[in-house]
Amino acid sequence: MAVMTRWLDPDEQRTWRAFLTASRALMENLDRELQREAGMPHAYYEILVRLSEAPQRRLRMSDLAEATGSSRSRLSHAAARLEASGWIRREECPTDRRGQVAVLTDSGIAALAAAAPGHVADVRRHLFDALSPTQVDQLRRISETLVDHLTGS
Amino acid sequence: MAVMTRWLDPDEQRTWRAFLTASRALMENLDRELQREAGMPHAYYEILVRLSEAPQRRLRMSDLAEATGSSRSRLSHAAARLEASGWIRREECPTDRRGQVAVLTDSGIAALAAAAPGHVADVRRHLFDALSPTQVDQLRRISETLVDHLTGS
DNA sequence: GCGGTTTAGTTGAACGCTCAATCGCTTCGG
DNA sequence: CCGAAGCGATTGAGCGTTCAACTAAACCGC
Image 1 (cartoon, protein in one colour):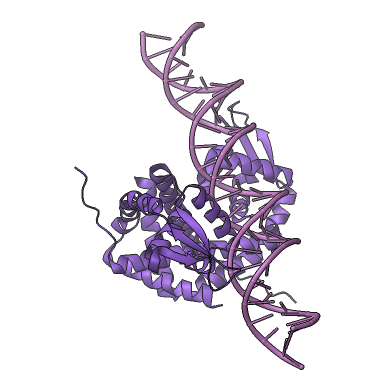
Image 2 (spheres, helix red, strand yellow):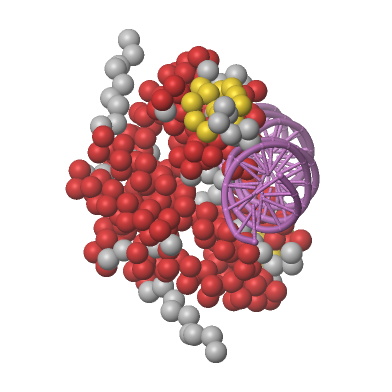
């Protein structure tokens, strides 16, 4: 027999709704600003960032998907667009004939360099400037706990 | 002349990336589970919830947009789908001929009642079960601070 | 090596969201 | 009153994401 639902108590509900509102508003702001200033959604910015940090600025599609926390399908579609924009290029993988390697182009590096300062400023303004150092620390611990919990199960 | 960018220090970067990963993973999980179990995305669930809490289970489109933190356009599209599913109905507003009032139907109430227990269980499992009571409290304060900061400016 | 099962990546359709344009109604200054 | 500005809501195009196939190559056991 089904167990009785344990509903959220008022405090939990307040927490949950505040979290929802805050994270959604934050993401929407950042996404809109990045789209306006740099002509790319936040997800694409993240792809470029991860590529820029990789050795030779290149990563296997799978590893890139992993790093950006996106599905293979999503990355495939994104890569198609990023390639059309000239920001990345896809090459065949020498060690696995199924594989593809995404490579950040010079144009991609330039796009990232142009987008980064504004985006970092926005993150600072919308997130870090609003919180005390203690709260930032708390948020880090909470987020890391959640990441472990969400990806570990 | 443009001011030098103040980049994120390693701690800030760790915080930001953990937050991004956690909130994205959380939302994707909840969205997927709700879609699978109840055939609706999380945004639509929220619309039904807000309507169910309103007097007479009815709200002006604008107020509903406000309550769910969505644009008028988004709500309009969503309402069209929810109406097609038979979960809400739109009526003309008696006091303002431009206005529309969204009304939760019996079928919508039933859909919500069917979806709620599973969804609440998922929120509990993915969020509250992972955190200590202290962390939940911290998260509430942080989120409320962010909401104030994001909507106040 | 051979057949079956994973794994890497892509594709297309359906869907939800954004943005800009639009339309009718209300409000307000003069 | 009347015209202009503002407001409430919708629309359609374009885009990004999801989900479910699907292709091709690699791996595994025997």
